[in-house]
Image: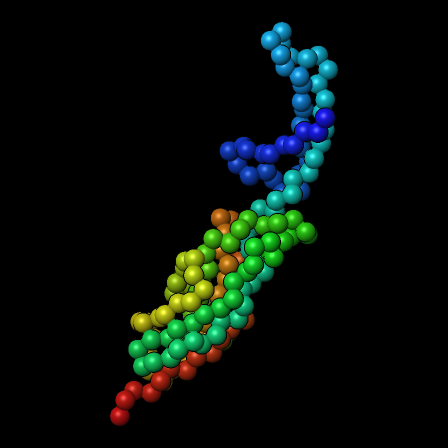
Length: 154
């Protein structure tokens, strides 16, 4: 007889930790005297995303908007030692005025395209990176996209 087991506890099992599962037959007379035990190792890595989304690309640039898109992390693509990570629930778009500067979050949500309509000036360089987000944190930032905003009208 095969037994399928699904963990339904109130918290996630610890990654790569051994657990013991004990099963005993139960009927109207009580619990059997010879329970069977087996051990298993959890296969869910509790980690923020490791893979980064695709490098952002400039979709549209106008005097008052910057539209950026990127390729998401495919389901099942993000693993730690072959164990699947928690699924991506959102993306964090970050912006900086320098390629090696501090990147501040300008958007966070479940989308692959974002239009920025404030927080930038004309004739300036801006750098954008994106990271996947899951219930355990924000993952690795992508490579950067450099956008030079348009000059003001004459």
